[in-house]
Image (cartoon, rainbow, N blue to C red; front, side, top):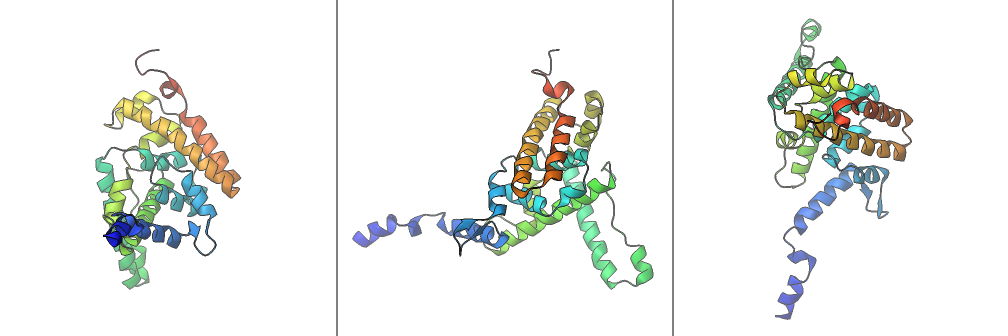
Amino acid sequence: AIQRLQYQLSAEALQMMPEFHRRRDVLEHLGYFDTSMGVVTLKGRCCVEIATGNELLMTEVYFGRMFAVLSPAEVVAMCSAFVFQEKTDSDDYALGIYYENERRRAAREKADAVEREMLDDVLAVDMPTEALARARAHVIETAMHLGEMQKSMGVPNMGGEAFVKDVLRFGLVAPVFHWASGMPFVDICRETDVMEGTIVRTVLRLDECLREFQTVANYCGDAEMHASCEAARVAIKRDICTSASLYLK
């Protein structure tokens, strides 16, 4: 009886303890803390600052230096994939483009020099710029890797495609880019079926997301990223998105 009670009071009796250990192993594998030293790394400190989207994916994307090649409008547009919450047809389209590019890359490895020139990556026609199309492919690839890695380490309900579908939403990437580029709100509404209130709420969450990335940039001494986020925040905080109500002037 005493042994049973001791077991029930121990950590081994907790149903979620095995999953906790697996997720801890994931964090250690990604370099978020150092078990030998018993300390949280810079990457781990940065991850703690992120709350507007999936913190693992957003941290990996930041440290992958993807944002360094994007303009402020492209940065905030890509961030919308992390904070927007509604599923749209753009999500399945983005995955289709990703798989087609992967198929072409595999074919290029087996092709001769002439055939390789005919197997360039497919650029997404729904993206306003080539840089955004490539950034979206990078984000999906990073999410695929994270999902597969967590699945291989025993984290339940994980997998590459499942993780992508769970944490990424691309339905407002183009509208947010156009908004940050100065397009009037009425024209933004014409290019998407997303409700006006949802667009405004997403823009407000994007401002918070950019603030989080600015904090991360401060930790890393990344002045360029901090300035890019600040420019993006200025670009999106205008007109109706700063109004107290959508229906009152």
